[in-house]
Amino acid sequence: MITKKGTVVSISGQKTVKVEVNDYGSHPKYQKRYRITKCFLVHDEKGVAKIGDPVVIVPCRSISKSKSWKLSSSKEAQQ
Image: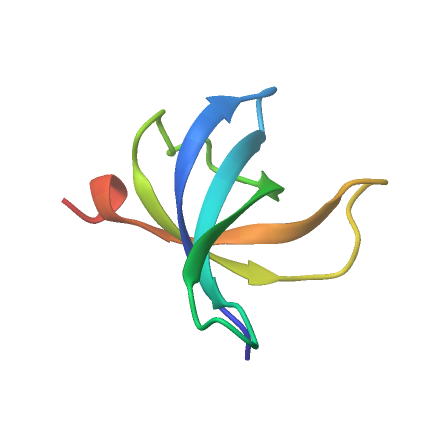
């Protein structure tokens, strides 16, 4: 199963958070590394995520037009 690690950057509603995921790519010819940043809208059923929390997200069935990920675990929720 695909999982992604990211950071919560905003809370969009009662059960929706915006998560920023950083990844690194490499240029095919020059081999320079560059950062790729993507944002995902994530379903947070319990509402435990706060801004700045590191989280793990997993794909799920589409919940709305732009939400197809759900929160798997939050570091702050485990403590």
